[in-house]
Length: 122
Length: 106
Image (cartoon, rainbow over all chains, first blue to last red; front, side, top):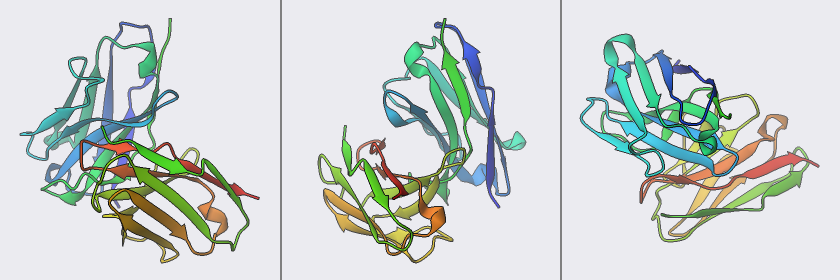
């Protein structure tokens, strides 16, 4: 059974950095595109970033482009999100999600992790 | 950006009743729409994709319909475990989500 477990959230000051991790199990991680999605009080659910299964495609939402960086380590079955220059409005729950389909992404997300909470506050 | 508007914001129903949830897109997304269920403290779950295809393991009481700009998620007879928040998502122009419909117990 596919499972995703996020870690790395916490309290950080505006302008600070955090690195989120997502440990995948129960499926062949290297065969799937992965994304990060967050839920914030201001914007609800917001897709942030996508990385292809072969690491050749990476996309970002405009709201995080230049501040966040997605990466993956297929040998460790892990997905990461490096978040820099954090703002108060970045506060929310961050979800690691897998694409529903192997290889060519469908942009339907299944499964989701339970999320990790990021609070940006002085 | 394609804006998805869900209605109603809250739907108060009793177990056994039929739930009808709406999602309207600001421009056509053809059938590129999905529905997710989210319960407090749990991971969101994919219910429906491509507007009407049930995801693996999803009970038949969940059905999706629509195309273009107007979509509906129907739960034919509410079970106690179906009380949750439901979100729609489109993938035609980047990826956006609706604001959600909370289905709570009347």
